[in-house]
Structure formats: structure tokens, C-alpha cells
Length: 288
Length: 170
Image (tube, rainbow over all chains, first blue to last red; front, side, top):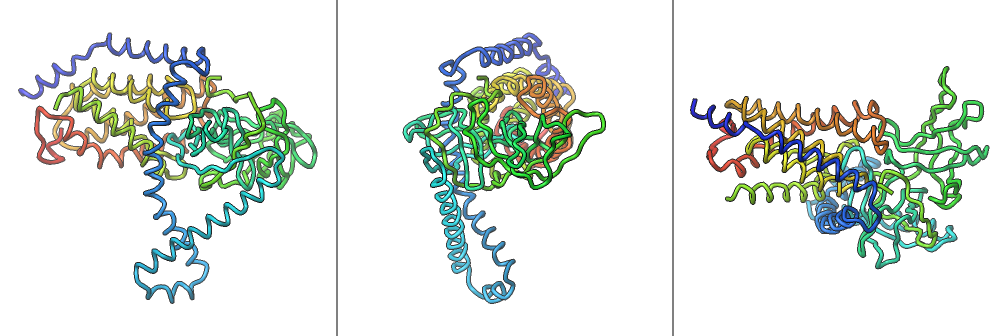
């Protein structure tokens, strides 16, 4: 009985406090939309991202052995005879094998990245991913290169398979990249075969969707999409993905088109930042 | 420990867990929200005012962590923290079921309202798109994590009534 009284007293909340908090949140949102890059909230974001960088790096570092072990287990599944022989070896050898396998995979990835970089006309720098998405709806990553390495806001980020995203926030030593799979992301693309324009957007239920393509000129499954360069956000000619499904709604003007990126965006560990493009256009969603 | 200090430390811990551990625990793209779990625990142990203020601060930090608009999650978490705190103070009983149920309901309210606000602002996915792929898995994920996190954190935060077991937590 006594406890009930205590709880009830504590439960006598102050609606005024709630009202103040709601108004404060609305003011923050409004300020975010109206302030420029040098505004206090943008500066606060850079601080929060920078402060979190060591923790993100630590988290990635701790998770890496488990990822390496997973790769090792995955590689054993390819060859059961090897698996049978390795079964008798001790834990130290297993860890050694996992480390070697991880190094080989990393070497393959970096080799592919270097080949891709050579094919680009603009200067690029390599970067490691040190932070993964921290929200289920908003898809962004953090890379270990910032203004001290020449990275600027608006730079395009690619991987060996094609487009990854765009730098939306940058500090001296790291940068935040909005992925093309983010719902607020939109990439102006061309269907490579037919030269039809459209917009690729991130979606929750499918990796990517191609919008604003009329049913009469819809691509077919397997068509490759490349950036069109329209709008100045991304340079022209970067592969965005391939069409994986097309359907024409009975009452709709535009076809429903699903696209798969050639980049396994959730698993990549290294990327290239195209530093020489001087793109000044940031897609909406970041308050620009 | 001072109440304000313990709440601040809990929020700091939530921030560290969110940037270091949460991305590694993502399952099919669903990332656990430790800031939410910390705020609801604060609300359940400290009451509506602390829950609301912690929700606003924690939500603001979470907004700053991501690449989108700053403010929506602060709004959502402030309201959820306040309501969860009020609910706890008026309805709480012995046992573990009610805190976990409150976390589940609060998670549902948070995910739905946050998705709705992002959709209205035009910076998130279509509201209906995320119901099955984000909202439902997130509620299940958060409820499961609450079973582990809530007793540990509540034990630290609720200082006026020492707790001996999970059952006596409430």
C-alpha cells in the first residue's frame, strides 16, 4: 500500500514538461531545415559522429574475428574433404586459417577496387568502412577518410561493383556516407541499352526501386542501369545495378521496377571516394 | 549515486552501445536501438519527467548519429519516455512481465510514430513499406533485448529500492 502511494506521487507528471519537450523538438527540426552547413546542429552532428568514431572502430575490430571465422566456415562448406581433414587440427590452426582466409578475401576485394579505380577518370582515394548503419530506416555508413585526406561533402563513393553512395557529412578524419539504399537517396540513371531516364531510390522491401519509367519504355530483367549525370549529384556512367523484376500496374502510368546493386552494400569493407568531381549537390533528407 | 548523474551515464552507455554494438547486431537490416531501451528503462525507474527529458536528449543524439533530419526521434522518444514513465508510476506491479510488455508497446509506438513522421517529412520510406520489414522485427528484437538489458540497467538506476532479483525488480 505504501509503495502504491509512492508510485502514484512519482507518477504525477508535469504535462508542462512534456509540452516544452515537444515544442523544443519541433524547434530543433525547424532549425535543422533552415540553418546552413555551419549551423549549430550540423556542427553538433560532426562532433557526435567524430566522438563515436573510436567506439565504432572498436566495435568493428571486435566483430572482425567473428566475421573471419564465418568466412572460414563458409569456405569449408565448399569442400567437404578439406573440412574432414581440418576437423582434426587444433584451435590455433583454425584461427590461423581464418586469419589467412580473411587476408585473401581482403586482397581480392582491394585488387578489384584498384582495377575499378584505374578505370575512372577522376582522382579517387581508398577508404575503410568503420561504421555501419545505426538505424533500421536510415542507411548511412562512416568511412575512415575526411577532409585531411581530401574528402569533401558531396563526393561520390563507389566500390568495385559500382555506386555506393554520397558523402553527406565530413570531419577531418572521417566522413558519413548516405547509401543509395537509403530511402532519402535518389540517383538519376539511364537504362544502358535504351537510354531511358529514371530515378533509382532506396526501399525497405526491395534493395532498390527504379521510378518514373513509363510502362511503354520499361526495361527488361537484366538491363544495366548507369548514372545519367543529370542534376550534378553523381558523375555520369557509374554502374548502379541491374533490373531484377518489372511489372506494369493496370492503372498506373509508371512500371514497378526492382533493381539489385552489383555491390553487396551490407558487406563491403572498403570503398573508393571520387574526390575530384566537385559535386555541390546533396540529395534531400539531410536538411540541405 | 546522484540521480541526474546516473541518468546521464545511462544515456552515455546507450550512445556507446549504439555506435559500437548495434551495427554488429543488425539482423536482416534491422538495427537494435539501445538508446530507446535505455530511455524506456530510465522512464520505468525514474518516472515521467526523467523519462521525457532523457527521451529528448537520447533521441536528439540518435538523430545526430544518422544522416537524416535532426529532431523527429527526439520528439518521438520524449513523448514515449514521458508516457512510459507515467504508465509505470501508476500501474506498476511485481514481476517481470509488465516492464517487458511496456517495452514492447513502447517499441511499437516508437517505430510507428517515427516511421510516420519520416514519411510525412519526405525523408524516410513510405509508411506502409516498413510495417513488416522494420516495425514488427524491431518490436520483437527490442522486447528480447529488454529481457537482458532491463534488469541490469534498472538495478543501477533504481537506487531507492535495492533489488535482489529480476522478480523483485519492479
